[in-house]
Length: 326
Image (cartoon, rainbow, N blue to C red; front, side):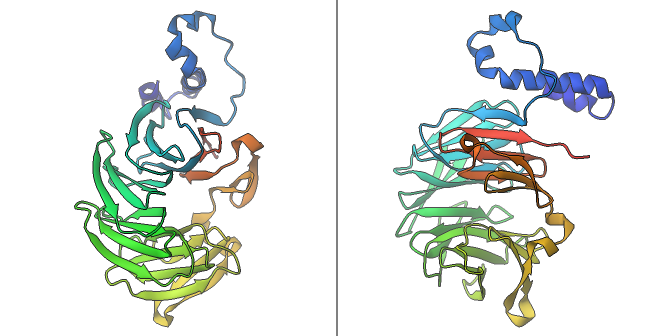
């Protein structure tokens, strides 16, 4: 069905709609089809309007703490309090591989930009690196004095940065596992880390309500900004490296010449950043509430692409929705 959808895309609207219905039907009834394929003859009618949930990924034995899409959007990785990491096929929901090795709950998972590696951070104070294609264990990065909360690969996939409950950020060689640098200045747990697009800088957010930008090569703290009285749980660079976006709804404009950060309201941001998002119990688009989420579907963690959202729930399930905007 996926191949047919790709072949027909933009060529035959009615046929495309039929293929999309068939694909959604298979996804929706996947578990029943796999367990009793001969029962397809008793299939229910195709719904006039499908719900936004494309897939529910079932397999973890507890709370899902972290989810991420692969850069090509073909796979989803999830980490759970059951100490496992799972890689899923984003198109079918199939359990592609289960990565076992951590001695505590998994708090953070991410793909490398080249999609070759998966990194996971855990309550066992370690980062593990896995082969994304085979699920094979490759490396363990040890050195943090407390649980690992967040991870980021550099854009060239050569470095891994980790944030921890020990209030530090560490940088490692992703290929050899060699420890390279420790960034120390935060007063509380580091909750999020992100590399700039050119890999020259690293940003970190913390429960100490600050965002810091570091020289990735030397570990020098270049700038610090208060998070307007809020604990910072998420940071990300803009594609051109000139902005930082945080969970507080603030965009930080980098001003290297002044060696500080200029705060700007999210509503005044460039259109590039007005797209899909999650805010409390809502999926948002262009900063406006789009879809209300019932309690059972609200995120403990999430990953967002231009057209899709993956959400990890306290039940141990991951659900995926895609959106089409005209």
